[in-house]
Amino acid sequence: MKLSKLFFAALFCSVLVSCDNDDDPVVNVPLGAYQGGFFVLNEGNASAGSITFSTYNYSLLKQDVFGAENEGDGVGGYVQSMFFGGDKAFVISGGSNKMTVVNRYTFKHITTIETGFFNPRYGVVFNGKAYITNLADFGDLADDYITVIDLADYSVDAPIPVGAIADKIFEENGKLYVLNGNYGDGNSIKVINPNTGSVDATIALPQSPNSFDTEDGKLYVLTASSFFDPAPSHLVRIDLATNAVESDITFPETLVGAQNLNEDEGGLFFTVGNKVYGNAINAASVSGTELFTTAATTLYGLKVEDGNLYVTDAKDYASDGAVLIYTPTGTLLKNLTTGLIPNSVYFN
Image 1: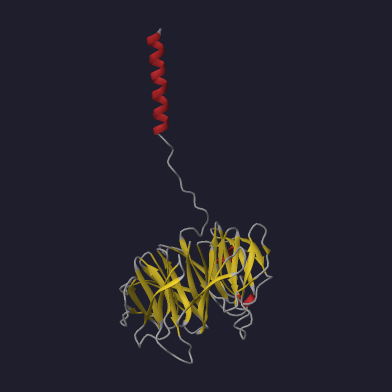
Image 2: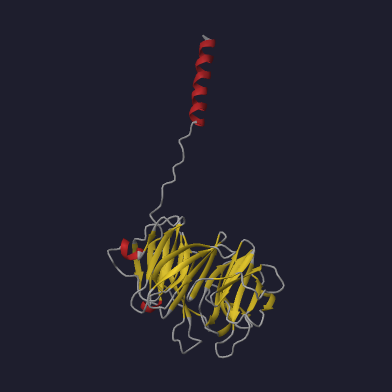
């Protein structure tokens, strides 16, 4: 009797172990048609911009995805930028002074916010709120501000005055970093406490900041001179723990008006004209020799991701543009048609 009980107990345990080891295979259900690819923002004109989507393997290229998923509705004029928070994407349309909220994977419309904006530029999500920079009156360099939106109910909170040009923005260590530069004007970065709205620090720069990237606690900022007083660009490295400038590299005399700084796999990439340049992230100087010359008629933007370089080409600003995808050595992998004036690429 005892033997029989032991036998059945052992059999029961073996069944349990067998079932436990025979787990059902994990099935990754796609979150939507736009998961696993990249968006290209097409700036367009004052009344209408658009967004193009491509899968990573280029098997699907779809124009005007917002219109396609929302009964032909438009996303607004002068589509400036896009940022993400959780499963949502936030599209800033500067020409329409509004921000459109969609599901980032289905691109179905959630809501549109049309108050609190005056020439909005860039945004970031932090601690349940969205922070969007506004250039406000183009003729006044000191009236710029940050729109604050509570993402729980999309209500607009009190704005945060910047006291300088407010353009690109990111969050680090609970602080908002705002680049105070636009088309050669401005020469600093404001560090803002989002809880109090106060400016905790101002980081002085040699010229106007136009692009940045971060890596391993360091902020790399690319600056350029005014169009009316051309001078070589600078690459500035800042310690984000202390906000101290660690290095300031002056570019060779031939590199004036550098733009589109990107970090990828230990290298820094940027553009001058229709050429792409590269540098080791910790190099003490910047080479004046390009990596390659692109086929872009009007190079408008650059994004580097996983070893590939995505170059946006605005062409003649009147017809459909393109995104050209290169290896770091200049081999063209793909030439994709976009909408009018593609300005940036976002990965999803």
